[in-house]
Image 1: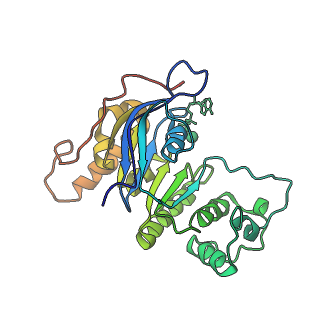
Image 2: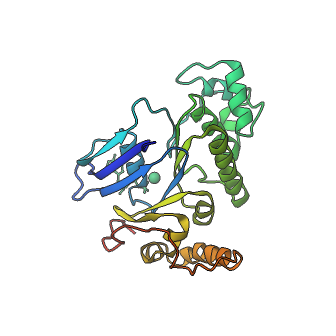
Amino acid sequence: MSALIRAQNLSVSHPGADRPVISQIDMHIDPAEIVTVVGPNGSGKSTLVRALLGQVALSSGRVDRLSGLRIGYVPQRVHIERAMPMTVRRFLSLPQRVGDAQAAQVLERTGVPGLEKRQIVSLSGGQFQRVLLARALLNAPQLLVLDEPTQGLDQPGIVAFYKLIEEVRAETGAAVLMVSHDLLVVMRASDRVVCLNGHVCCQGTPQAVSAAPAYRALFGAESQGTLALYRHHHDHDHDHVEPGHDHDHVHGPGCTHDHSKG
Ligand SMILES: Nc1ncnc2c1ncn2[C@@H]1O[C@H](COP(=O)(O)OP(=O)(O)O)[C@@H](O)[C@H]1O
Ligand SMILES: [Mg+2]
């Protein structure tokens, strides 16, 4: 089966900016795979996601989406008027009305059953993320797109959320495109990682990316942990593949051009 979304030589410039926010991006998302985009603040992750979804104009390149592709999208910032009372049940029916049974089912699936009558503003961060995910699941998406879904969650909350995402993927067969800063958890839970800094620094399996010099240059000390994770894994694997000599494929021009603002 062909890719759900494929970007070729994709560049986006924001009006008035002197250089593109993201340039010459080649990437794709296959059915049922979990792809995570990592990169520093301002590296263009949200812009890339919105370009893949067709929400921003491209300055060059192309994005192809499977025709009729059903997408469940949770943007990085969900604006909810704090002063306006709104129950979870009503929130799930915006913008499209859904039945009670379906609402109950998605809340159950995301681990927050019975929240229908609660006010959105009264939810914890973790509950709110699960309600957002529940709403994204309503149209039986083939692709879930989650932009920093674990922002503001504590470490156990983050781990639990990724576990939930893997369960949803296993159950529904939906592919997942996620933006995240949680390097260690990302590396465990993703099939492929795209390391972005205005351009694609490297992409490939978590093992391959965590060993790539471009990734280590970009994330510094933090990246050592993810590499150690795989070294450790190798140590206990009893296979005799040396780190750096396995069959994982990393590709990308490296991070020689720094588009971030620090
Ligand atoms: N609509 C916009 N107009 C102008 N500049 C923007 C717009 N959206 C994002 N930017 C700029 O593009 C850069 C990348 O933003 P973004 O894609 O949100 O990065 P990330 O999600 O990796 O933090 C930032 O410098 C940001 O200020
Ligand atoms: Mg962002």
